Amino acid sequence: MKKICSLVVMLAAAALLFAGTGCQSKDNGGPKALLDRYFASAIKQDYAATYDCYYAPYMKKVSKEDYVKHRKEASVLQSYQILALNQEGDSTAHAEVKLTFAPSEKLHRPVPVSTTVKEDLIKEGGEWKIKVW
Image (cartoon, rainbow, N blue to C red):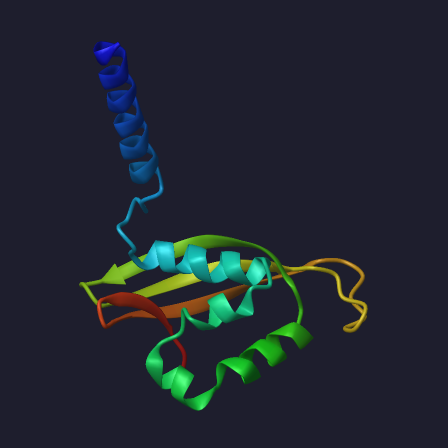
């Protein structure tokens, strides 16, 4: 009985270890992880989470409430594809991302539309953030 209990405990510990490593980002929270979090939250229309990806100077000029209100009135992001990502040193990166927006009655757009954007990223307080302006 004691051996079975020990075996169960070891299997449970191994399962927790594998589950924990499976959730970690391949790039340890680098620029790609930020872009994925940023655009995935926009697709989910979780604009409060999207806002949290911006760097401090943007947040000082635009409140979270204003940002969320504005995003709710804009086109809904349907998908994204990171076309290029170039990291310069430990604190700066640049990305080119293809965005596809859903059809919009409000904008009289019956089909999805795609556009390519450039994003600047900066490390701020040890975390990667979207740099605007």
